[in-house]
Image 1 (tube, helix red, strand yellow):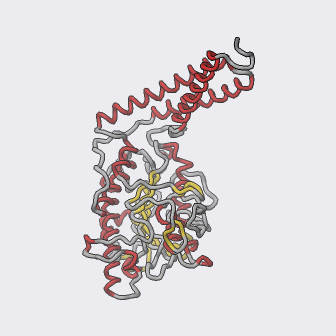
Image 2: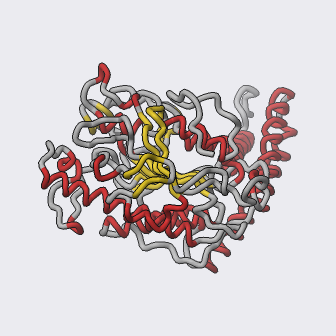
Image 3: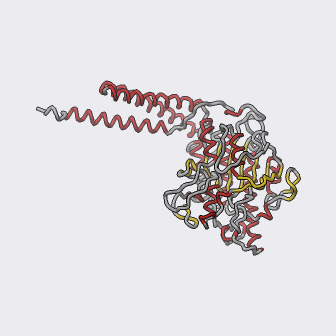
Length: 460
């Protein structure tokens, strides 16, 4: 006879079954919770009213090591009375959608008491406006970046709240610059002060994340199968809960009811997500990371155009190369590293080589803008017209490691809301003032400030 204090073998087996079932329950719930939390859907998004009937997109493109200022800044007194500099000449075809923004500063990147480490500070503060902690350990500390601030507010309108791209390595740890963690140089986006959002360097993985793996027909079938599996998983969890409920006491039943309420909310979110069309472009996934740096940038730019065109996301960061990059440019006939060349000590040969690198990056940015310009949006205008694309660096003069009068461009007019085709001299205000204005145009609830901002930059 079994002791009343020891469960029978049959009872023990049943309890093991219930524990396993509950593990399935929790695992199933976790899989569902990984889905985006869509709260509403309109084909035109939240900004249907206004100059354009299409949604506004926002992207930040970063190049490392500053520029040669004398070759960057336009000639003229500002306004529409300016001539593009040699470095910016590739942007002439899209000048009508361009603003050159002078007088924007990032004082958080200045040395202060922390001494060396300007590259880490330039990268880590560019979108946050918050002075970073000098550490090469795990106790990194920066601030929430403006892309993530906006994504947190409007990200539910698209399948992905934001997209993070890079053509460089992905590093979250280790020391890179005079006692600073590599996380500051290799991540533009920060979800919180301690959590960078790692960018994706592989264009194939970007495509598959956005649209699924395989050919066009296979992607459609995979989507149908995933949706069916999600519904089956929910049905299983509900059936499992129904079997479990009679065996629970009052308090556990209350906990189960709370669980089921959460599951029903997940089910409603899935139903809303299914009403949001999943784009399936007539493109094959790229083969992977190309060996040529220029091709890599072009492929990533193509992925970003597709993401905006299909309204898969409206917020993105694109790190062309990590701050402090010492990449060589054999395609330009240069064997020296970029970072080393920027410490040119005013030697003309090195200065001329940095000018060529600055021009090379500008050409690739111009090609990206041209593709946006040539891609029609839902309102018949171009994607570029309905976007705000920032291009620049957290270093101004790479030789002196300055962070005032940063080289910053803003392309696109947010659907006609912003003035373009001008050289605006802001007069020495925080870079974050620009970001507050952009956040307003994205439909984010009015932010009182961001980082070290002192107000909004007047772009209208």
